[in-house]
Image 1 (cartoon, rainbow, N blue to C red):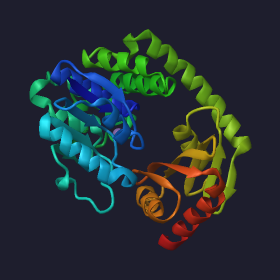
Image 2 (image 1 turned 120 degrees about the vertical axis):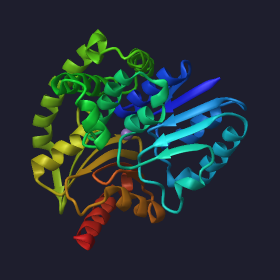
Image 3 (image 1 turned 30 degrees about the vertical axis):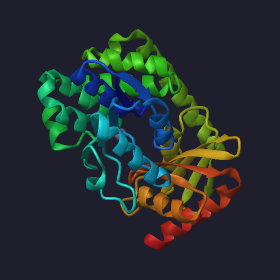
Image 4 (image 1 turned 135 degrees about the vertical axis):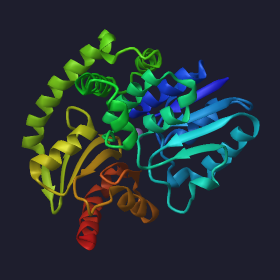
Length: 317
Ligand SMILES: [Mn+2]
C-alpha cells in the first residue's frame, strides 16, 4: 500500500495532487505537525510506501518521528518533501529516506520538481496554485511557470482553490475529492462544490473583517482576537492590519487550549524561531514560517504568552 500524508491547506492539497498524479495510486491522509507521529504509527503497516508533503517536524515528537521514519524507510519507500524551517537541533540530512527540503519554495513547487520527469509540463499550473496559496509565487520556478499561462486565469483558479479549501476545513472526504480532481489537472473552478464554497467563504471573510474591527485587543506590539467567525489564519492577518501592530494573532479556544495563527509583516521578526524557542521552556507548542506561524497554548498561559512575545519583539528590534 502507498500513502500520501499531506497538510489540508492549498499547498498541501496541490502537493498531494502532484504526488498522486506522479505515482498513480495512493491513500490520501490529511494531517498536521502535531498529529503526524500518531497518524503514521496508527496507519502505516510494515512494507508500505509513504510520501509526506508540507508537514513540518515538531520539536516535541522529534525522536519518535525519526524512529518511525527509519522503520518505514527500512521496509518500503519513504519520501519526505517539505519547506518549513527545520527543527532546532536537527540537520535535515540526518533524516532517513529520501528528503527534499528547501525553505525558499512551497511544498507544491518542490513536489512538482521532484516528480517532474513523471508529469506532463502542464501540471506546473497545479504547483502554481499551491505557490499562490502559500504566498510563495515569487520564486524563479514559479515566475517561469507563470509565463506558460495567462496570469489572471492562474490567480483566479488559485483563489477559488484557497477560498474553497478555507471554507471546508475538516471535510476530509471532500478534500480527498479535490486532490483527485487536481491530480487530473482539472480546473478548481470546474468543481462546482469548491466554487460555491469559495464564494461563501469570501462573503463570510468580509463579514469577519467587520467583526474583528470591533472585537480586537491590543497589548504592546501584539493585536489579537479570540474565536473569530472564520479562519484563524485569515483573522491573524486582518487583526494585524486593522490594529497596525507588528504581530497579529487569532486563536480558537478549544477546551483548555488555544489553537492560534500568528502573522507579522515585520522583516526583523522571525515568528517560527520565536515560537520554537518558547516551545523549549514554556507550555507552548508552535512553529511555522518567519512571517506566518501557528501555536497551541494552554488557556491559563495565554496572557503570559502575549507578554513573552512582546518581550521578544522588544529584545530583537
Ligand atoms: Mn506549505
